[in-house]
Amino acid sequence: MLIKVYGSAIHGVAAQTITIEVNVDTRGVGYHLVGLPDNAIKESSYRISAALKNVGFKIPGKKITINMAPADLRKEGAAYDVSIAIGILAASDQILAENIHEYIIMGELSLDGTLQPVKGVLPIAIQAREEGFKGIILPKQNTREAAIVNSLEVYAAENIKEVIDFFNEGKPLPKIEIDTRKEFQEKINDFPFDFSEVKGQETAKRAMEVAAAGGHNIILIGPPGSGKTMLAKRVPSILPPLTLKEALETTKIHSVAGKMGTETSLMTVRPFRSPHHTISDVALVGGGSYPQPGEISLAHNGVLFLDEMPEFKRTVLEVMRQPLEDREVTISRARFTVNYPASFMLVASMNPSPSGFFPDDPNNTSSTFEMQRYMSKLSGPLLDRIDIHIEVQKVEFEQLAERRKGEKSEDIRKRVLVAREIQRERYKDLKISYNAQIGPKELEKFCQLDESSFSLIKTAMEKLNLSARAYDRILKVARTIADLEESENILSHHVSEAIQYRSLDREFWNA
Image (cartoon, rainbow, N blue to C red; front, side, top):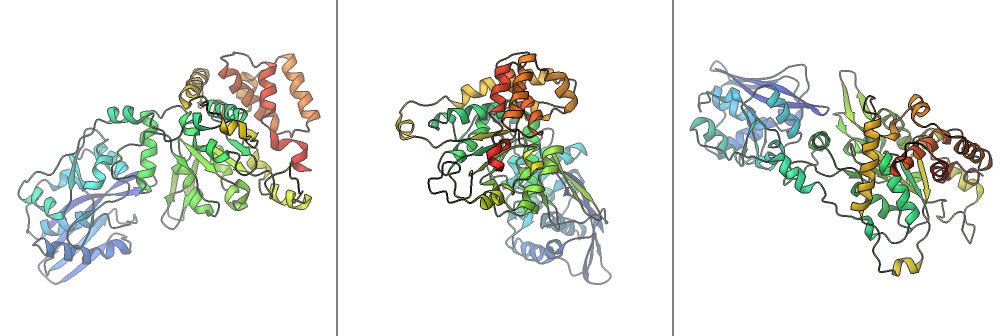
């Protein structure tokens, strides 16, 4: 007897329905699994056999042929255990399964029949709804994630016996329902850190506000213990809240990577990713033998923080150049190509020298050669994609001991939202959303300078020995500063402030 059961495979951040055809033939004995399964799927027969035996069923001693279609698409992981097991029981007439074709069934089996969670449930549920399936049956730990997809019945199972009884005897499974919009709104402002906790550093806070308002990449330069990491961790609290569309995009990526918690259904705050400096280039941008999203994709719609940026391998930093420009990652293999979104705000930090205290090093422990080698880890093309360079000074004792709280993230965020709304309206007919994305044509149109501003930037280029690449960056940042003040035109004091945010272009860094 031939039975068709439906599962799903992940390709990039999308899902593709897999038809699992199970045929049981009374002539002969054997177990044949075809359709490009990996080792985890090939080993499923042992898990299925033990699980069925422990719930009162068995794999029949007949010739069993299982085809996973489309046969030319590689299938990975143990997520097909339950669907294969149910297919075998139905094809061997051990259970009735008249409506099995109405459901996507996914789950990994333990030897006692317990269902273990799987990855990529959200894109699987979205694809199931698009293809008209009535429902999806999943391990209990995955159901909250799938339940954010409306018009799809989501059923939770803890043991394969519950799935068998659902089809064979009509016993109901727990049906999971979530009010997505309500849950999204309840947690949209749930941040663990706040800018009011930062003592002093008013200049750095202002730079962070400008960076958030225009979506600019920023690098913090300062001695150890000056608060660079503390400032970076608070950036998500002043960024505009996620839209529901952005939340779904972000959740899909984390779902595919298996980073969703069992109690989490939807990501409601912008992600903050902080990889260690020993990370490989593949772990950062994504890829591998079986491609998985990297840290820059996990930071999509959020913040990627690179602490002590010069300590990262140069090859790792250089692979970020293309994603920073295109805001997506393309992983190419001989048989397929996968695209992962990677629209993130880069926040980096670094010591000003190997000793950490240049140019105020009392012992002058960093030689010129060491300084040049240290700075050479940050290439010109990479710095070209970082709009704001801000020096973070050591916090004095009087500021640390001050009891007065600083400005709350909530108040800073209000100003950022006003500036972002101005930009959204300005670029509504273009394929850009904020100032950091504007190109040469938009610069010419939206960043025009009056005579005094032009004279100021010309003088700065000559006197401070700013690099040529700094010019466009100064204009973009000045446009954002003007938006924060709700000024239609860029004025000289906007340009003056923007010039202060180009520390690494000044002469003494390259001396």
